[in-house]
Every structure is written in structure tokens, then in C-alpha cells.
Image (cartoon, rainbow, N blue to C red):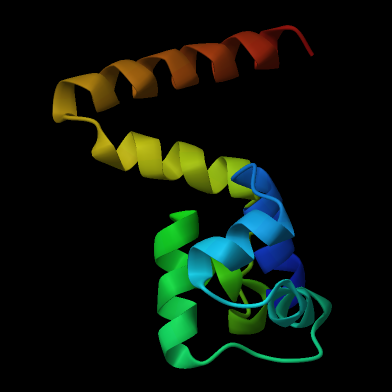
Length: 109
């Protein structure tokens, strides 16, 4: 998936319309539409504003361009961000539940 598609996916995942996002960034809706259609590219400063507004990592927006071997959706990125914000005790609980569920699903196959 390209930058323009990731940008659109992240915007929709955040629940914003193009108009809402354009207003929040202080740009015209047509400018944002150009970013999402791949007909124009944001400046480095605008990229910083987009990342901050959407709460995504730059790596997410350029994931496929960087030759990653694992594809990560917007929802998965949010789960990763949430997991990283947990303390060690909470992470151990999430890890335990995840491993138990993986084991359970393997038994049920």
C-alpha cells in the first residue's frame, strides 16, 4: 500500500472526514485530496503535522515503501501503541492471555 492509501486509511481510522482533517491542518480539502490521490505530496512540515494529528508513526505511512516483510493495518498499529504504553505488569498479563489464546486456537484446529 502506498503513502496516499495509508494516509487515507489512517484518516478514516481516526474517524475524520477529509474536510475535518483539512480544517485541522489548515489546508484546503482539495490539497488533502491530492495527498490521498497521489497527485501531490505534503511538505516535510506538513507530514509532521499529519503524523501528530493522526497519532501515527511515519513508518506506518511509508510501510510498503520501506520494504517491510510484515503488513500492519491501522488498527494493529493502534494495538501496538496501546501495548507500548502499558507498564511491565500489564504487558505480562496481555502476553499471558495472548499465548493462552494461541494455544487454545491451535488445539481447536
